[in-house]
Image (cartoon, rainbow, N blue to C red):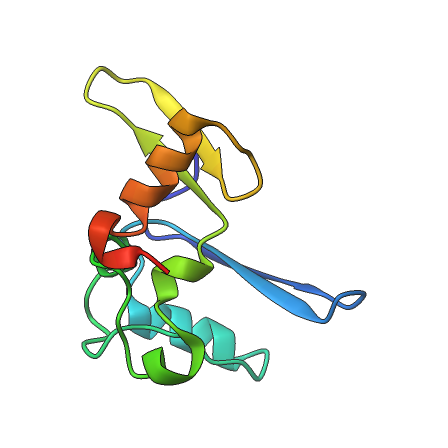
Length: 114
């Protein structure tokens, strides 16, 4: 498991896409600074000092919402630790009722319906 405030940005030259892997305590300002090194921006919230875990659980409404949609809709995967200590890896690619429910919850539940 990575640090709670980690940020890793990977660029795929083949598909010309970028993916950010962030810990739940990483702040929007820190993600913006890392993204800027690659000439990118991120769809963070209005208050860049808020940790991204909370921002995404609220749906991910930020400055670029009207152009790119809610940031939570762009989440591709989430690692969840439940109250009993179980670790669940849910991705937008895997399809099952259970994993779909975890992704729905992680994207802000009812506020994140597309």
